Length: 76
Ligand SMILES: [Zn+2]
Image (cartoon, rainbow, N blue to C red; front, top):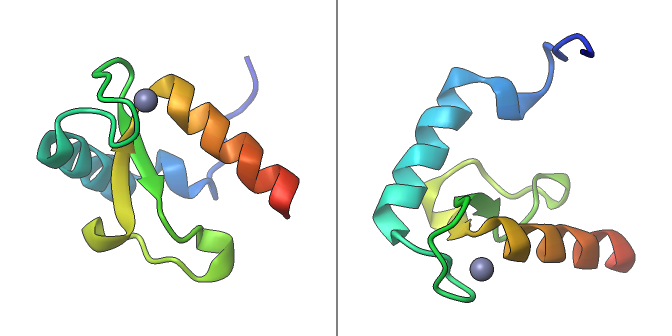
């Protein structure tokens, strides 16, 4: 098992709390309505200055999250 990257912001307690808040606020995937494997997604990515703030976060299911991240990498 690889060592935990200490600097990974997604491993920080503050992010976990924020992600839980966004998931409970939205309740289901904002793209497809699924409630499986929900997690918080940055509308404006961190790499473009997007904030870790509920106003910049939406709940996405696992499938939509992967698709969004893949689309973002292609666009970069
Ligand atoms: Zn979805």
